[in-house]
Amino acid sequence: MLYTLKNSELTVVVSDVGAELHSVKRGDCEYIWVGDPAVWPFKAPLVFPVCGRFFEGKYTYRGKTYDINCHGFIRPSVFSVAEQSETSICLRLGANEETRGVYPFDFELDVWYILEGERLVNRFVMKNPGNGILPITIGAHPGFNVPFDGKGEFTDYYLEFGNACSPDKINCTERCLRDGTRTAFPLEGGKRLHLRHDLFDNDAIFLSRADSKVTLKSDKSERFVTLEYPDMPYVGVWHKPKMEAPYVCVEPWCGLPGVDGVIEDMETRSDMFRIQPSDSKSVEFSMIFG
Image (cartoon, rainbow, N blue to C red; front, side, top):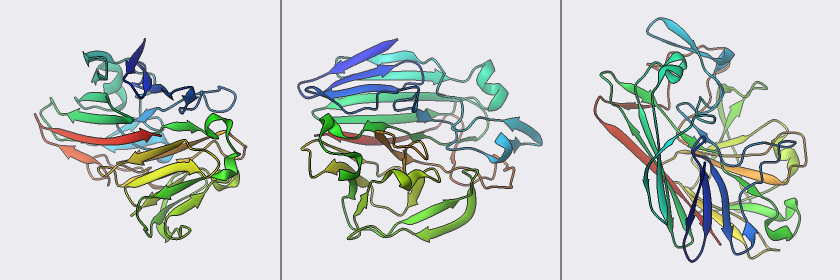
């Protein structure tokens, strides 16, 4: 089912499947990627309870090996509505028999969408109703139509960070798994990354130590999207490799893919929140649509 949020600036559509954002319009401009199945069938999926893929699609926990898909299991999961108003919605997912087959933990995830003027707040509240420590992480994968309103070409657009920064690129192998190294990723003037389709020929660019604010824009359009993600230490930029896809994903993540050649142990792998019983962890990011 689709749910609509609306205020004087924006109209937002959210699905209960995957708690996925389907549309953000300001006036006649649609910002969110259309989800063309011939190119990339998603729009703005979430990644949970892991980010990226694991070596051989496996991990271990207390001596048992589990299979898990890239980005976890959230995309086809149907959420219930916990709260709803004209300008906000909370969608909820809890552990069930199917999730425990790939992720043997009790959890509850609340995904909030909150409209505040031209800002859309995306808040994630991860709760541990179980008796043991809950290893968990989350990320966002929003895709944006480029160009906006048909103004300019893909290569006229760029990402501009709010403050000059010196990020590191998290290096990955051809299997989109970490190789354990990071290298400097210079930005033009310390702030700008100009879009080119061949940037993604080897899949996503993932950065650490980047500024926590970045704007997707072009000098040929008045439209823009600004993402603010102070709770999320990594940001990725991606579209489907080796094609001239008319969109780009800008992805704030709290976790990272697995290490190539290593089947990791969920109790010790890095970049996971470890939530105590009866406790919770909340993170959020915002998108401002101009």
